[in-house]
Image (tube, rainbow, N blue to C red):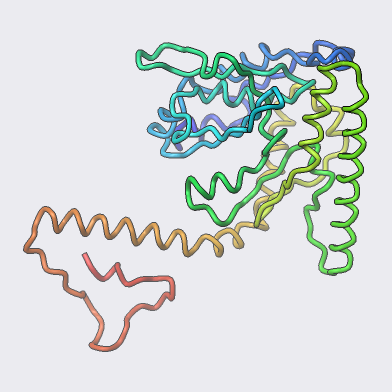
Length: 322
């Protein structure tokens, strides 16, 4: 979303991406309520891959609307959806950094923004932010209000979610219902267990981590169309290791293979929306022509009286005007 289409063709190559994101501080830190990975090291990685631009500048540059969810580090604030409409001055890089700041793994992040003079200033000086999946991984209701979205396509790669999702839907209703019941039971037991721990741990920082974990297990992580990568043996053991070029290439290929079975479904379900966009575009062109030449007459190019010449049921016939 921060690069043009031409730039992405070069950037999304394993040899062009800087992947030194993880630097281990120590596993024992988590028991003291401290992160196990170095946040500054990750920030340096993002600086090399993401330009220093705001959400509004990114939209003007690429034409894409980036949406990033972040959650407050404290327990008294609601999560926020950052984009060119709600937070145009916020730096995309710092929002990305906050969206990866899992409590206990990376430290919370201060969001930065550009003021009217283009200087970097804290977005909300009194608050720090963490991974959006902690409170609201898929902000479907907010996206619906902002953009009129009523159908969602989810590419789910969160390692703590994948064990509860299936890359292949069962054809038998009994097995689907049984699987869903098991998932709900696991989530409920995890929530109750974490609630018990939160009420009984003496360390406030550790209690805050447990509170965030409760939010994770009580969320919905699926949409109308779900793209789920196949299981990779040993994934959990590589979470804190920087990927090699070969591993990165393999991840990209797995993502492509996981998307292929969904392509036709996506094309079909988005056909009406894409047709509306084409119609609106053609009507705007027609309006511009009429404004330039008020005497312009709209004449149907072909087709007999009383008989439609529209072959495609999704075609509105606007191709025959202009």
